[in-house]
Image 1 (tube, rainbow, N blue to C red):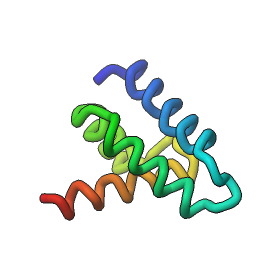
Image 2: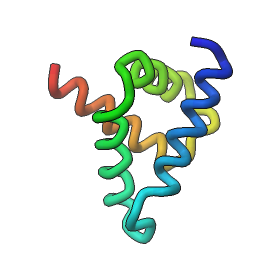
Image 3: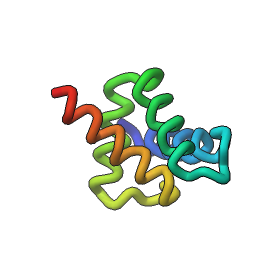
Image 4: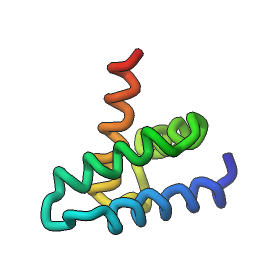
Length: 79
């Protein structure tokens, strides 16, 4: 995946987090954003953003990082 594509995904995750309803409830934002990524992002996109998090997560907000951690946990749980 190119750097440009990864940069675009970082921007998208941060925007998804920023535009979730219930901004006063961080847990709700995390749950909503994680569900969105799970349902609508292609597997290669999920793999790339998870790998980016493991490499330090540069550019991702703290909340976006937690969203990706939970996405990864869901995938591991599903096996």
